[in-house]
Every structure is written in C-alpha cells, then in structure tokens.
Length: 297
Image (cartoon, rainbow, N blue to C red; front, side, top):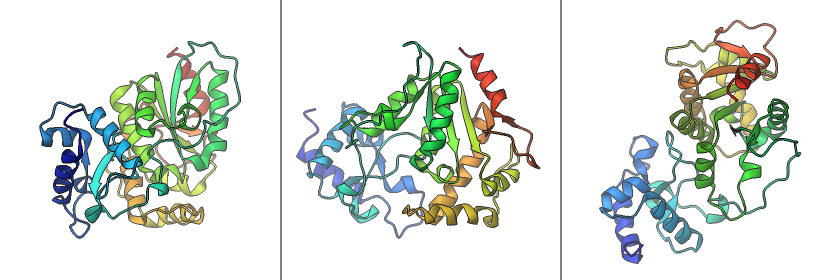
C-alpha cells in the first residue's frame, strides 16, 4: 500500500472536487467515485478493496478532511462511493455507520445442519418482525437465512460483509414493504444478487393495501410510469416513522425497483395472496414459492 498515503489523499481531494456539484443536474453517481474508478484514475496497482479499506480506515480515524463516503452505496453496484464535501455536503462520522458499532443480534436458533443452504434476505430494519416470520418459514423448509443484523460482526465494514454474504448464498430475497421499496440499500443489494447468483426473489407485504394498489399498476415488460397518488400514502407513512429521506430520492427508488422486477426469478405475495387482486398474474403465492425453493436444494 505504498501508494496509499497522504499525497494520494491530497490528489484524490482535487480529483473529487472537480466532479459536478449539487448545483449541477446530473445523476447521483456522477458526483462520486467508486474505488475502482479511483484506481483507474490514479493508475495504481492497488485493488479497489485495498483502496476502500485505506479510505475507510482514514475516515474513521478522522484523517479525511474533505473526503467522505456516501451514506448509501452505488445505485446499481454494492460498493462505497467517495466524494468531496464541497460537492456532496459534509457529514459527521457519527451520523452513519461505515462499520458495525454494536454486537450482532442473537436470533432464535433453529436445528439445521451446518451445511444447510443459505438464503440472503435484503430488508429494512423497520420490518424486522416480519422478516423473523419469513426466517422461521424458511428454516422449516431447511434453509438458513443471512440477515445483516445477525451476521455482521462488530467493527466489520458493512458493505464488504454484505457483499461477501450475497456471494456465499444460493438465493436472495428482497423483502419489499413500504419502507424497503424506497431503500437504496435494498435496491443495490438485489442488483448485485442478480449478477452474482441464479435465483433472486421479490416478496411483497400483502398486508399493506397501499403497496398492493401500487403493484396493481405494474405491467410486466414496460417501464413503470407510476401514479404519484398511489405513491403518496407510502411516502407519508414512511416519513411518519421519523426517517430522514429525500422525497424525490424515495420516489425514484420506487421506480427503480419496480422497473427491475423483470430481473427477478419470481414475484411473491407474502404471507397470502390478496383476496381482491386486479394486477398482473406474474405474482405467485408464498406456499408455491416455498415449493419451488425446496426444489433448489
């Protein structure tokens, strides 16, 4: 890591400052650089992993005066973004975690063999109770579940661990609720899963009537031109939970996820198919999904 030093940081500051500022109307990622882009720009032999590790360490030690990581990963790649604070505004390191600060949560233990196939579940922490129900149903069918809240150890870098977690799982599930449908993390995790593993599923919370009405407007194979009247109930409820979120970003994330549904192996209704459903028939019920999943073992 001889090239990763204070001189490298100064040169990177200048490069990142040259990117578009908030006053310029560009895609979010154009204001940031990934470690891979930084490597290619700098012409150094260090791997993107080395560069991320170095910058993460410097950030946590308070040695990056003008550079900071983004709170959310790259929209379509599960990697850290780095930007200059004059372009992406400064932020206190205590305002978000780049590494895990607490201990993993101890979840209910299930009697499963050590080599039981593992399934990655992408979700919003707000929906943990529902995800625990899903986890139990999967355990009954003989599957272990990879959840970030229980799998990432204290002081480990979150993005690196999530990325490696996806790669070692045989399938991935996106648990889609009014909270997670607008999550940049969930979208990025599912995009990576589509590229890394063969089976990626979207499970939708059918107890949320507003979410179901939005899904009824989904037409397979066509871009989602969503109706803001359908999105507003989800937006209002999301903000009531006290989460800081850019409204336009939330709406854009909904559109991104709906437009990516065609990439997923199945679209699943959880826990039961809505009794009055007027939308696409591409959605299957949860018991049918479990049967298909069992065939993969």
